[in-house]
Amino acid sequence: KAPPASPPEGLRERGGMRYEWRPVEALAADAVAWDLLLEVLGEAPQCPLLEISEVQVRIADASGRPLLCLPLPAAGVEAGAPRWSKRSGMLTLRFEAPSSLPAPAPSASEALARQLADRGWGFADGFLSGPEADALQDYVFSQRASGNLRVGRAGHEGNTASGATKNDEYTFLDDASGSAAEPLRVLARRCNRLLAQLSRDHSVPELQGLNLTQGHPMLAVYPGDGARYGRHYDSTSSGRGDNGRVLTLLCYLNPFWREEDGGSLRLLSTLSDEQGVADVAPLHGRVAAFLCRDKFPHEVLPARWRRAAVTLWYYDGNRLSERCEKGPDIEGFAFEGG
Image (tube, rainbow, N blue to C red; front, side, top):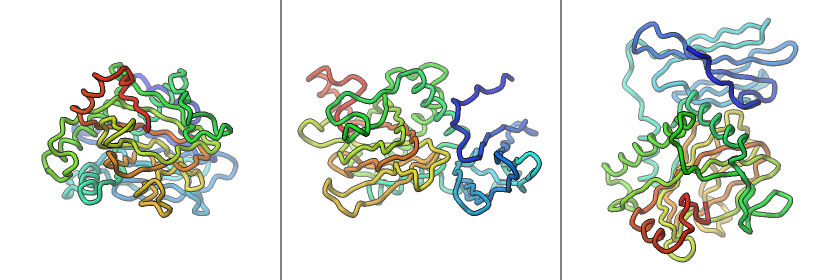
């Protein structure tokens, strides 16, 4: 096997720590095993602290300061005993599927579907596995390195010094057919399965009876330096914002995110809401979702470190067709407010 392509520079390293997921040669045809390699850089490295849940592994330095948060490499895996080498500054943690699987915990999609049914918004960690999230992050930053992500030219967009209310670099991807875009297709298929589940359950009235259509994905990077997106609706039932969007899904791709980095999604009840409904941190592999037609205005709080995400919108297909017939501004389904 050829070795995997190296990720864009710096994506797996920050603050004196570097990480890598490495698949382990399976002992059985249906076995799943991954090693997580955590390298502590610098002189006199100290063993980092680990906290492992059903969906994530969190890593902190010896003083307890958070460094890294990663989704697990696959559903149902269990962690073995960590192996620390002080000489090399390397901590190795193996995740394997147990020989006899326990009753499965609710999947990230099931958890997210319940939240959407109960309150119209939600988020789920581990929607993408660790290696899947890394691969999608690599894809987003390779698109950026190729010059395909740019700050928009609308009046509310620009660099942070301009006072604009939207400072991310982004693109709507019209063609995701190449082999390099497979990580994006993995996310799109998983989101489609979530929508199929919601349709079967008839649990979200706002989505029932609609000819739901998945729009073109938007890749976005907030470069830090206070980049943000001011308060806005993704869709309204009248006026310029009547674009047919009914559901927003965002997949975050930030393994080293820390609270001081900012860049959280703040959901609001109204544009003038002073309290906010919730702040959602952009953790690696986490997907946030919310009903968006006349619901849940939101903002991206100032990001002080680079922040990457992929957004997928689902549209009322009938309204989308009407919009297509009325003008040329339908390209990429890229309406104002995204």
